[in-house]
Image 1 (cartoon, rainbow, N blue to C red):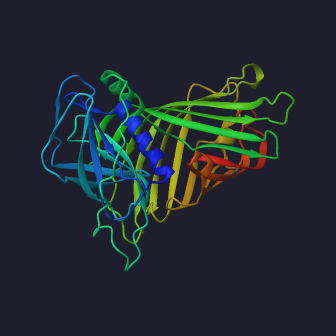
Image 2 (cartoon, rainbow, N blue to C red; image 1 turned 45 degrees about the vertical axis):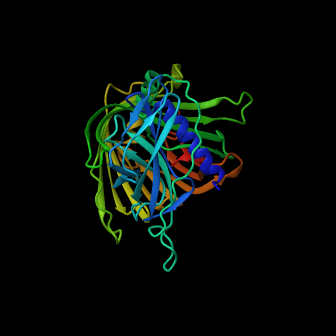
Image 3 (cartoon, helix red, strand yellow; image 1 turned 30 degrees about the vertical axis):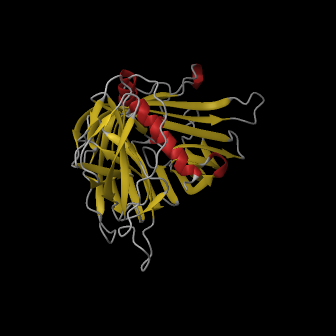
Length: 409
């Protein structure tokens, strides 16, 4: 019997796949993940389902072996999918056929991860897998009893193949950029929220496991301070931050059993604009060229830390806020300490041009589950002490604690 979370994930996977699945000889092909959580390092069975929305019979003959990879938190693990029953199937109009594949989960993988089959099919196919802790010593191993192939429901198709390809090429280009959260405190402006996305414009190169290692991206971040207690409940200030940048992810190293290695994560470099769009004497804007890089110390499935540094220079002048260099300086840095997919503490800091305007932001994220909407997220406590929380008053000192929800940390 599947849980509400499993059923919801399955329905979402089906809907997304049918809206943006891979087409092959008139078929729409999607990966169907098993329900529930699978123990780390164990075997599982995943299905490939082909639906025929056309008017003619179509043949479904996937390869006997498919090379795929799991991705999670900027790392990837290659895996091999082996077909359980050889031979193809003839799919009648309006019908479907499923083929089961077996694979072994990487021992270091834990939590939610994306399984992607980049090759062997006309288009990449993805599935979300939930991986739980490995069985305790002496317990029955998942390798001795592979998970049975689950039963799946079928929903009708209404979209046309051209729409499916367009949806996939558009949606799959989006990913997370900076943290997304909403927090509230006792000091005006009480509320603060941020959302951030990036859109992949061009892929130049792929890593050894099919990941896109070299890309050009468009990013957009919006951060707002909301004066809820004022008579009009107006927004105090909003920073609009579009950017255009080149991003390179370094190849993922083999997991270190002791978790002592430092792994270079790659770098990002490009152009960023920031302004508050208020006009008049409250108008603030700046343009920068930046480069950012970082290292991972340890393993992402255990206690680990990430150190990131960014350096930038101003371009195009800062006539409406000439003193901002004194407070922003020419760089910032971040240190994150986390326990796998558990709690994390992030420190972000900068010190100004002459290192006399120290600023600190601390973000403590604690995983929580909202049962009423069947949703996993984070409880966030944010502490800010320094300058520049508001672009409008970048020279004013703030010391405030807020708490709320973080969707992406």
